[in-house]
Image (cartoon, rainbow, N blue to C red; front, side, top):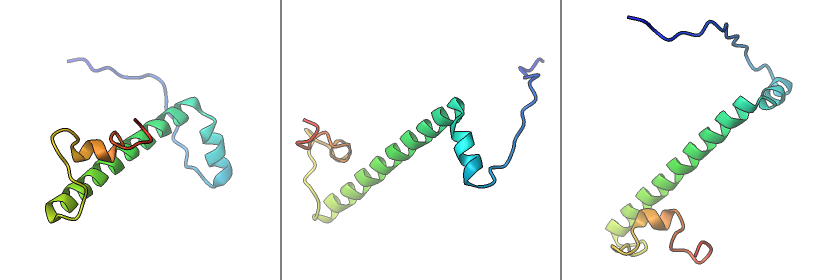
Length: 84
């Protein structure tokens, strides 16, 4: 059985303070990875907001969700006037 391996030696260095963080942000791979993490966090926040809305609807105190405009679409702002 063969495995795909990298012969490149990876060096892991700790980030010791703000100057090292700024230096790391200069790396395009770090910026791309941070962008991905931010998008994942944004999506998780929207899902949490949709879950909160669904709980409010169950309790009878939230917006009315319907088949035409489900709560998860409201959470993403699809039904708002700003994104029409």
